[in-house]
Amino acid sequence: MSSDALPIDRMFRDHYTRLSPVTVVPLFAETQLSSAWLVTHGRDTKPSFVAKRTYAGNADARRRYTLRTRLYNDLATNQLPVVRLVPLDNGEPALADGDYVFTVFEMVTSDSEVPISISETARRLAMLHQYMSSIQLALPRDSDYSNLNDEEIATGISNADRLEDKELVVGLRSVLERIHELYSEEAILTSAEPTAHLYHADMHPGNVIQSRTGPIICDLDSIVSSRRPQAVAFAASRLSPEDPSRFIEAYETVSPLAGNEYLALSSGVRREAIERLNWLVRRNLVRGRSEWMADFAKHINAIEKWGPNSISAFCEQVESRQLP
Image (cartoon, rainbow, N blue to C red; front, side, top):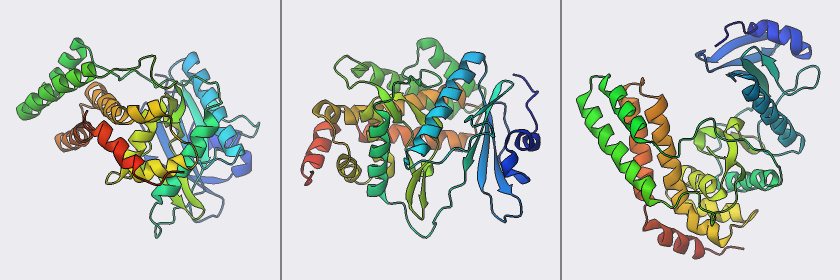
């Protein structure tokens, strides 16, 4: 990876002159993959912007990320309930900086005294999905985590073994073998499934900010080419875990689901959980044991809660509501 990225203060001085002068404070630890900063304008006492530098790797990846940021700009321009991207002085939405892409977003002030409205979040997510359904833009996930082959399972176990935690190795082996079985049992990506469009694939409480004007959706990098049942069911399972039909009911007041989408809801949650477990195996084995076990437990619980028998039960729960 190239290390010749422009210093953050020079980035603003050269390309965001209307925002200068600024004070910049790291938001999270800088890594080779991404960095983020809180940016305070002039004599303001609170941050006004969030700056992000993301590793893009090659010319094709940078081109895709530039297309992605144009989408963000379009969403903000059309008054969608998302965080707003701040363009460069020349009007471009992002800046290619060596191997990286640099973006700036407006800071959203959270109204911490008001809890996140689940119903309004569902309606706003439906508005976003509905708008993006007509956009012809392919934004695949960075990698395919839909399944693990035998070599990756062996690598995951080997990586865990290097942690010198035999209990974790035994548990990990069992988990990997089980999700491998679960995946094989699923009718994945068949022609009978709903068509893939752009959806926000990571709607959980950490990606919703309750502002003074209502819920604002953030982490726009999680907008990918996906299938609506997977995106919506995952959101319902994370934002309204005790009563997911409440989320679905509110979502459908804006954008009703089709019959085949109902049948794919339960499968969607399991599939998302499997993909996230696979991501943990491939990418995250350097983390500590407690974080590992917490993440694994969360996704295993999702798989078990949304098991095969939950499809009919969930549909009955939704249908019992007074849906429009």
